[in-house]
Structures are given as structure tokens and as C-alpha cells.
Image (cartoon, rainbow, N blue to C red):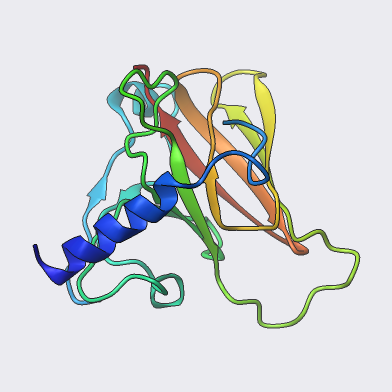
Length: 174
């Protein structure tokens, strides 16, 4: 097994031990490639964030090594990345896996005030609807399991430590 494969496998094993308890309300050199969300989501108004399958940004690559390639979505401002270990994300997982997302935030240029919560607060809105749900990753960006109630393109508003960013994630049916 190549070194990057061992790193990705080790990361998956580490995240496999993650549970929703205390983390969520609900349970370099290789070229990057992108994958569109899903045809259905694109036709319904477009899902703005694309899934990258190349190397992570340098600031988010801690814990990964070499030419590790992992599915991820970068926030609109570029301040946070969602590493998708449960890719593709699904509404109903019948195979026993989870919608595992490792949230990694860009190091802050300045310290935030003491009143800012470090928790990652997620407000997700289903594209083309009034459906809105909230999720929280206690302790801030890190490992999580984020389940959403319906298939489609979800617009996420992300808030943590006085910072904000947005991204779209596609959740497929089964």
C-alpha cells in the first residue's frame, strides 16, 4: 500500500471512532480534480461548491502527507474546508457508514474576542425551499457526523470563533 493510502486509511480509521457524542447534534503535487455535486442538484438551481479530489490546501493538510488526495469542499471565503470521508453524502445510509466530515479552519490572522463561541454552528438551507436546519460541532471545527433530512443541494452558513464562511453540500438519496 502506498504511503498516501496508509495516511488516508489511518484517517478513516481514526474518524470511524468518532461519534456524534459531544461533536454534532446529529448523528501537494498532484493536480486537483473537481466533481460536480449531482445532476439533479445542478438542475435545481446549481450547487455552487464543487467537490475537489486533489490535495488539500497547505493550511488544511496537517495530518495528511505526501500526495494524499481526498474529497473536500472549500468554503466560499476560503477559511474552512470540509473533508468528506462519507463521500458521497447521503440522506439514508443503508451500508452502515456515516456522513463523516472533518472540518478544518484556516488559522486565524488575529485572535477573536473571548465572547466568541468556538463551536462550529451550521445553518443549512435546502436549495429552492424554506427547509432550514441547524447543526453544531461542539468545540469548533473538527470531526463530525452531519446528517441532513432531505436529498438535494444544501447551502451551509458556518460560524465559529467569531468567523464565518459558506459552502454548498449535496446530499444524495440512498
